[in-house]
Amino acid sequence: MALVSLFELLDHADREGYAVGAFNCNNMEIVQSIITAAEAESSPVIIQASQGAIKYAGLNYIIALVRQAAEGTAVPVVLHLDHGTSFDQVMQCIRFGFTSVMYDGSQLPLEDNIAQTCKVLEIARVFGVSVEAELGKIGGTEDDISVSEKDALLTDPAEAEHFVSETGVDALAVAVGTAHGLYKGEPEIDFERLAEINRLVSCPLVLHGSSGVPEKSIKKAIELGVRKFNIDTDIREVFVGSMRKALTNNPSEIDPRKILGPAREAAVEVIREKIRLFGSTGKAR
Ligand code: 13P
Image 1: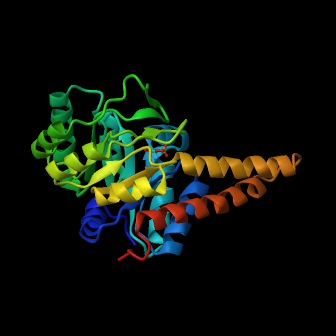
Image 2: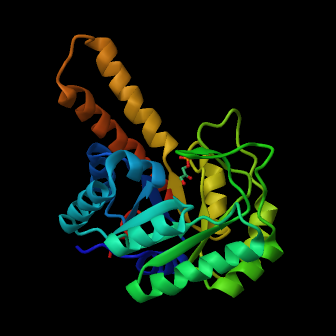
């Protein structure tokens, strides 16, 4: 199946009240884990790459891997840029075949974020590429972007309404208390704020920093309009944990397949659990 954009997935998710997982990749094994999990659950899936992942693997490799994965499967797959802070990087991804991009102008003053997002949308529309934007600042570290606890800023619902009506963006990432990376305790999600944003904003909402968020909070967030959950840390932990175990059990192992193979299998399981939690099992169309 050819790659699709967020339009094809999130409208249906909204109508039926479920969410789609957006899983970060940076190598072949993780792309394979994501696709194997989506197929096993018969679920649509978003495979996303951050600027850091693109720097590590190379844009052409990421595109080739995900395109190959999509072409060989019957489940719908989106190739999405995660946290594109550079306008040029976003344009490059659109030009070379990403079907969805996040333009992250959350570090900019509101009106500049609106102006830049509109510029991205104007071009993305020509190519049928969907655009996610961010308002507020999500704490923690996602590859090469770090926002300290002090600088993390929750999304203002009135600003979100203004932002979406000015830009017409396809999905909005909101800061409501989640953070990228490992949590020290249980994340405190501001559900009242999320409910208010959902009341004022018509587009699907995105929750970054969804690894480690308890099940009941994920379910509540779905009720309050979250249609895309970003997961990176939970995959990394399981993947590297499995590699560590393989090396500990056999320190003299020199065959990468014996270390990466079990890690790939372990990642499938954690991704399947997330897909079931998000309610997208059986939703591939
Ligand atoms: P986690 O670090 O919680 O997996 O979040 C990933 C993310 O939001 C990527 O944008």
